[in-house]
Amino acid sequence: MGEFAVLGLVFVLRGKVEIEGGPSGRVVRRFTDCERIVHWTLAIVFLFLAITGLNLLLGRSMLLPLFGREVFALFASASKEGHNLFGPLFLVSLLTMLFSFTWHNLYEQGDLGWLLRLGGLIGDGHPCVGFFNMGEKIWYWMVILFGLVVSISGLVLVSLNFGQGRVIMEIPHLVHVVGSLLLMLGSLGHMYMGTIGIEGRCRE
Image (cartoon, helix red, strand yellow):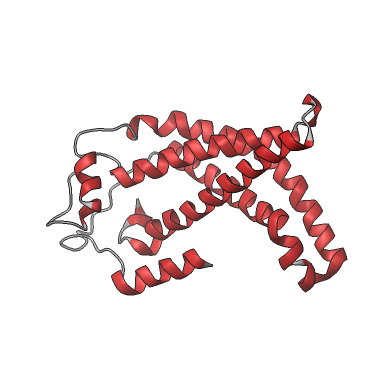
């Protein structure tokens, strides 16, 4: 809830970042159909895992008092089975994202200047960048790195045939929860910037 409050405050104080000079009426096709499918497959699977994962993490304390033991038990069981089923699909989607977008997200001239000027918040004018700005590249590599950590730790948690003890299982469980929460927090900012935060972004 805290991040929703922060994003709401940012929108109230800053408003939507408008296109410099106003919209020209021309729509630019930025991504191919294949790239869009890769992005939205990963996004939809991530949202499903986030919802089911939050239910497994917080549902007992938040949903059980509201819906009762029987309804919550049914929902929790479905969340567990769905979470375990879609987990490997997230890893496959993540690797597809890695192979599809890495060449757009390598460091290039102008990225450091963008970062030092905070994307144009410092100084005059908007820094010139390539296909993705440095902020987008940082988010991309966060998704890839944290996504791999979450995926690998999740596979350890559901693979009980390697003789892991309780103590060993606690470590990937903690890593899985922390990594997932960081991805969820970052994704809220990503969704804000891609919808109401910046003018024209939803058309790209």
